[in-house]
Amino acid sequence: MSLRTKKEKVSENPRDSLIKILGYRGLEVLENAESQFPSETKMIVEKLSELIKTGEINESIDGGKLLTLFRSVGLNIRMATKINVEQDGKFVSLSDKLSNQSSDDGDE
Image (cartoon, rainbow, N blue to C red):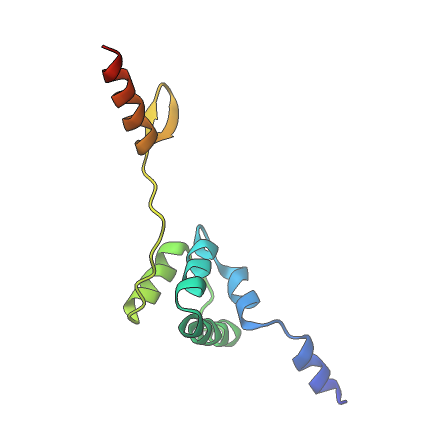
């Protein structure tokens, strides 16, 4: 086995090279994409990895940018949405706040 062949086997897989540059919530978007569109996501990850290796992508990709990329190629990645509101100095989910208010209303 030549030295070059060993280096090719040691080189990281495309997903790992992409994960290294993912920013805020990027991994979350990637995992959702992989579970919803596995084969399409694999092709996109491979292409992004090539662009990273050639230096055409040299900045962090956050979740918003990655989600926009997937949607621009026709993959409508669904993300879990959670809305938090401030109550008594703490953030609580909107559903918890609404359920607390409805139980408070029932006490009157």
